[in-house]
Length: 130
Image (tube, rainbow, N blue to C red; front, side):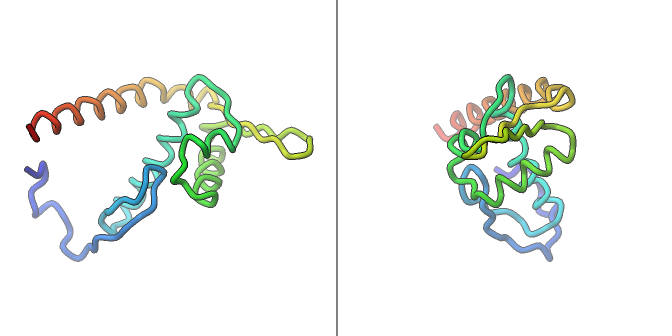
């Protein structure tokens, strides 16, 4: 059962395939939905940085389906938005670490609630499938 009625969607939108850190995702080609997917990628990065500092390669291992371009772009955006710190060490090979800023840490309760909602949703859908 859909939680949305059909009239809530713009019928001129097309369904498209978008790559995400979690794998391919079909979505509606509408700027709102595309920005939602970008937000999803950012949320996943922020989640991995909660309470820890990670190097680029460590982040990429935790998001194996993310392309280098997408991950680098998302990290730049999060840094520009003041949510993450990027620290570059002057060594060879280059070493770059990412961590949450205080502003980024302020999202922790929201991310925790999103995780709880996701778990509840999965439990609900699994119960409905039985």
